[in-house]
Length: 162
Ligand code: FEO
Image (cartoon, rainbow, N blue to C red; front, side, top):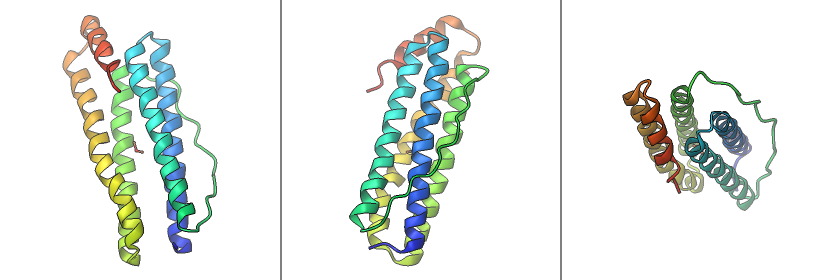
């Protein structure tokens, strides 16, 4: 059982996970347009992970006898100045998601909703990994500057993401 206000917060987070998924797919499409298939693969993998995150919220809300309500998904940005900018935006977005997860966690704590706190604990840890993965890409892309050869090397590396 969850409160009406917690249900609203969880549904809002579910929507943010779908919006994230859609944003990453748009970024993948941008990478595809540059024939950077490794980065596109990385971003599509991220897209799928976000769908899984959204479904975890869907399942949890129902498991708690709540009601899932789906809201509109924000239209994602289609164009970027570079792959470097794409990954800067990935990092910024993950930092935003971390803050939002922490806000829902804090609300669960305030309500003494221990089940939701436990559920969200997985996301708190996941966000540490998500930010670290994005930060690594930003750092490496910053390191190579304008070198096309190094960009292609990183593109090949990004293809290895499972
Ligand atoms: Fe589901 Fe990347 O946060």
